[in-house]
Length: 172
Image 1 (cartoon, rainbow, N blue to C red):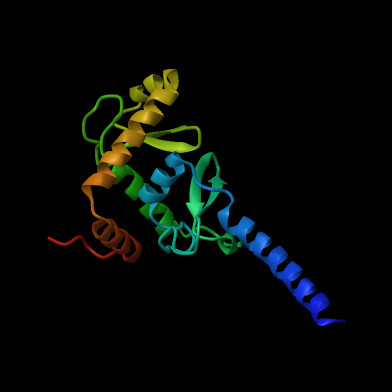
Image 2 (cartoon, rainbow, N blue to C red):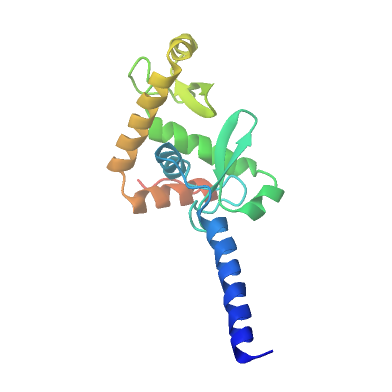
């Protein structure tokens, strides 16, 4: 094999490898809504690792709920109940307000599902209002998430997740 043939073969191999790696890393891209949901969820329900630390989080369905895991290897593992609970606490804390009644959520809020997303509400009758206008309430919840994310710094969110993962108390 001549030098030219070897270089051409090597170049073709590198191009093919690069294309596979690039496709693997960039797809699927996260929508704007998914980016917000990743920021609110914060951690992987399997490993407890911060989402985004292992590349683009992977969207999966758990029952009716869509959540994100940190990486493809986590697809083969089981959800850790401690992290699952922490994710629900993160979502409720970021939402903070009932999108129907517009007042603070109770300590043990009721919830409903809309298009794979959990929406916390203050009372069972609010489910009917959400069922009547699901898209409108998803937008309201996204707005609540954006407001919450804007009010907390990344270091504060990271510290909160670390406390939830480890069970450490909040600072006084």
